[in-house]
Amino acid sequence: MAKATKKKDLPIILVTNDDGITAPGIINLVEAVKHLGKVVVVAPDKPQSGMGHAITIGQPLRLIPFDGFDGIEAYQCTGTPVDCVKLAVDKVLHRKPDLCVSGINHGANHSINVIYSGTMSAAMEAGIESIPSIGFSLLDYSIEADFSAARSYARKIVDKVLKSKIDKHCILNVNIPAVPEEHIKGIKICRQAYAKYEEDFVERNDPNGKKYFWLTGEFVNFDKGRDTDVWALKNNYVSVVPVQFDLTNYVLKTKLEKTWKF
Image (cartoon, rainbow, N blue to C red; front, side, top):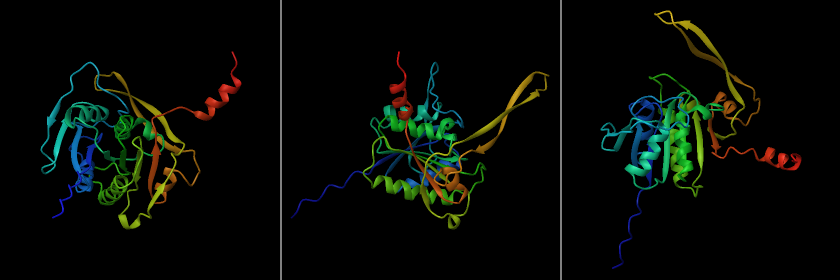
């Protein structure tokens, strides 16, 4: 009788976010990927939006078991999204997971938002640690947002990545338009648009008469290309932008090497 073939181990999928471990987005992301591997959740215990790549220094970090994902191993962390990835690898998994997924963020992380985003910084930290990663965002800030289309596309994209021979430093920034799934035209591989917020600080006084400032602003897209994430989302496509943590401007590097003589 032939010897039974050993069953292949399931891939380990680390799930995190920046909206906090109780946010609807991460609940939907866990639901999307839980049948694709062994899922472990390590996420902030409170919202951490706009934290970028911040890490906690000078104060203790705590990991507290969280029983909110129907039998899935989960922990809430008192630190930032990047802290969550670091602690997950070092103290929870004791190894690098096969994939890290972050989100699903409440609100866009297209164009310049990738710089400020805690969602994408968690994915970026995973990439730095040689863990393929994906950040997911839905273009709807409402706590009552419909995540059904985002959940469906997250499952498709994670399944595709797990079945592909993908680079260990691969980082994907995925944004999903806030429309019903039947209105989504498909997926577009894009570049990051040149866009930014034209910011304004509104000056106000608190009840004690002390001055404070409140950040406001308007999103402005300077990029008219039809291959950008902003264009894709405006036209009801899911945008997928491969990003990297190497910020070197290689074109300018080559130019300076030729022109700067000291």
